[in-house]
Structures are given as C-alpha cells and as structure tokens.
Image 1 (tube, rainbow, N blue to C red):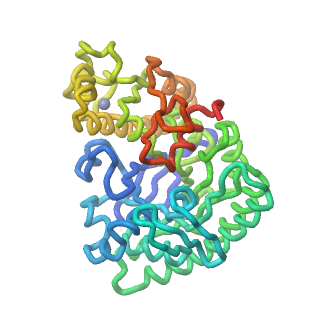
Image 2 (image 1 turned 90 degrees about the vertical axis):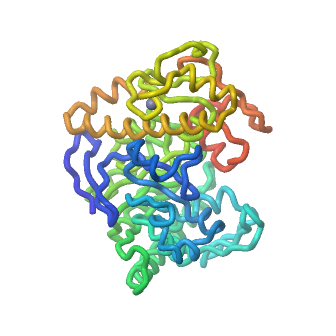
Image 3 (image 1 turned 60 degrees about the vertical axis):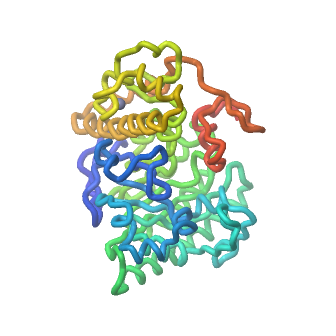
Length: 414
Ligand SMILES: [Zn+2]
C-alpha cells in the first residue's frame, strides 16, 4: 500500500509496500525483461547497484521458457533468486510492437510469437493467468498501446475496450489470487491510463479507471512517438485525476531529465531500457553529463567513469581500463557499463528522494534536468540499420524500442 510522506509542489516522496518489501519512491525499476538484465547482470548484482524493484516481461517469459514452467519451479522470485519486489508488465506493449500478424477482438489479441511464429492468444484473463503464474508483486493490466499519432475515434474506442479489459483483469486476478496454490496471493493489479495525446480522452479514461480502486495506476502509451512537450502536457492533464493515495507509474520513460521533470509533475515509478542499452554501446551517464567511453581522450585516463559515483565499477576501475575492454570487445566491458549506468539511475532516484526529504527538490531540478543530458563528447555512432540512419544508441536486434528511444532522445528529428 502507498503512503505519501511528503510533497513539494506536485512532486511526491512516498513508500509502497509489496509482499516482497517496501519500495521508497520516487523509484527507478530495473528492467530484466527475460528474468535477467541485458548486459549480464544477475539478481546478486541487482543488490549491489541499489535496485529496489525489478521488472520482467509477461510476453517474453510466456513465450520462453513458459510461465507454467516458472510456476512449477516456485515462481519468478525463486527462479531468478531475487527476493525483492517484482513488477511484470502485461504483454500488451510487446504484442503491439513486437508480434506479427495480430488481430484485436473484444476477447483479446491473436498474434504470432516473434520467437518461433506459433499462434498465441492473449486477453485480460490470459495475461493475468501468466502474471499470477510468475507470481510478481505488481501485475500490470492488459491494455492496447495505441500508436501516436492515431485517429481520435480509434483512440476513443480503444480506450473503451481497454477499460472493459481492465474490469476483466481485476476479476480474473482476484480469482487467481484466491486459488490454493497461488504463487503470490498478495499480487496487486495496476491499471493503465491510455488515450494517446488527447487530454480529454486521457482524463475521461483516468476518471473511469480510478473508480475501480486499484492499488496503483500507470500512465501508458507515452514515449511512443510524441514530443517531450506532449508527454509532459499529458502527464499534467491527467495527474489531478489520479488518486493521491496510490502510486503513479510512467511506463517506459526515460532520460534522466525526463525522470526529474516527471517527478516534478507527480510521478512515482519509472522504468526504461535506456541505461542498459546505452551502456552496452559505451554511452555512460555521469553527474556531469553523458560520456562515450570509447573516445580516444580516455586512453590514459586513470580516473573512474564518474568521480562522483560509488558503484562497484567506479570504486575499482579506471576509464582507461573500461575503454580498453570496449576496444577489445570483452564481455566485461558491457557488464561494467550496464552496472554503472543502472547504479547511476538508481542513485538518481535516491538523490531525488533525498532532495524531497530535505525540501530542496526545486533546486535539484534546476541544477540537473538539463545538465545530465549534455554530452561531453560528440562521437555517438550512427545507426547502421536502414531506414533509420540517424544518430542513436541502438541495438539492431531489439527493433521494438528503437523508435520510442529515438524520439525520447531526439524528439526534434522525427
Ligand atoms: Zn559508477
């Protein structure tokens, strides 16, 4: 349950209790899509990088190795040996971005697996069943993530259907929680607000889902093609209709600046693949802005990645060494970079909480919102895949997130 401890403007300092521990908010959730952080980080590493809550993916774990298998092995906590809170997303976002040949009906969505092409059907009940089998602490509602831009009448009918799906999710999860062999009977459901960038649809949808009195609420469907301004405007429009005594989660966002600005607008939970993905390409976040560790200027640099960072990498290794690992294409390079970047994001959230505790969040925001996004060198690689051809941090293998990442980083380069 959520407890609001302090407020500065719209920014909120709080805590949220789950069956696997209490989370201090605002919080950044570390994304372990398939039960591991991409970049070779294990559950043991999560402790060392200050992770409070881990996020895994319903769609991916359902496709492989299968949620029934994970349930038979005692649930996701036991499977990956993480004893802290876990949030699972509903699979909706992946179905609408990764899967091929999907067909949406009132009952749910038919699609083909991106791994082996087999037919899968997922609706609210199936998504809740999978998440109940995984036994996460927070299950996300099954929703349609509408692409931006989309015609208003389509968004309206999609929102209505997502609302009907949410009522079915609530009912289904309550039933699964009451089963004798439930993996995590205290599993909670978060509703997801949709409505693209139409403020009136967002508000109408938020009012309706708030009536269901769920343990938490997310703002979904952002960071999929809109500008930063549109994203902030949408949060501002909907925030006053979100229950004050429940946590608010902004899905899939974002840069350090996006996080600070969204906290200022009343958001408590965040997740993003960006720190891990950027890390894998040698782009490292520091309190002085972003550095590209592969740059020539770090050849003989004996200082840590970030002198202000206490992460396990910065406590021991030099920039020169980490740069060498990247140049030599050692796997350790990726692991170190991801570890540092996630530690940075977790400390960013902690610094935000500390500033809220001290009543100085306004000053923190002024100092860091833009500074953390400044690049210390301009040698980012250009994406090799067509048709994008733009400057971006991009894994050609994970096509789904490319567009939203690109737009997050370079909203003006649509
Ligand atoms: Zn570090």
